[in-house]
Image (tube, rainbow, N blue to C red; front, top):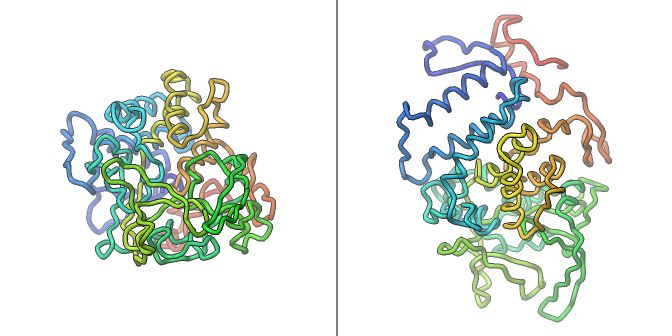
Length: 414
């Protein structure tokens, strides 16, 4: 509510039963929520992690504080970069020593979004790689939903990307989501690659060194990076990120291999002698994939941004944090000269896409309404600016009409 609508109604646990929530300001809501979260992790509260998978950890609470303080200037008009940095340091310190280069990050980006990604969640089996600080569990035949991770998985699959059942461990192919040109371009599709199918046919195309795009449907499968006609699914690369495949549960690594029929890159625990064993159940109706809400990689990038914006902490650590994320993705390290806010915004897009951060990031960077356009923004093929008041959504009329006239004000501009 604070992020999307700004002013909203306050409903708290000390409110008398039968009374209406009171409309209040964005800042009051921010202060109320942040004070509650700060109390939860204070010695006075005596927080004890449950140790039970699926329950919120202290890391999840403090990671949420990092997000609030990262956006404090937008939400309240007053920046709080030092608090953002300090809480990020607390989270980071609890994860040092294991995982990728001792950072606490999982060894493999793809594994974080696969069927057995519960091993990376709080109190998951791979403790040294518990990168997911807060997750929503999903399990086939127990927590089935057409939303959550299932949407993010199935929406990017189609027979146009040769997504035959088994390639991604799920039977659904919804043919919904493909990437804007500008987003695909940030993945730097500049490396020439060649694939060879089982009949010896070779195809050369422009690939990327960024492992976060390993499963994308791109030019190698006949997709265009441009969005000339956005209603055509192949007009735009398809950012496949979530799967219902399995990584190696002992190491956290996702096997990578080339499909013998097409030569295209594939992933997941598999048996090439069994067409139906490219992951877990090849024709599963619903996935087992948990939905990450906040990951340690986001905390590293947030700490770096606090350093760049507010001068808090130090640039040496900030650059190191960003390079943990880039090196895990097999992307070249940033130099000190490349450690800039502009590059950090692009890095957040590459690392955190489909994790509900992009709109908030663009608002914070002053790029949501103007200064940066993308295909079909404001219903224009090349994208055009939108009015500044659209950084907030309108308060729905059904909400406002539930109160006496004038009690619940509309957001400016609507």
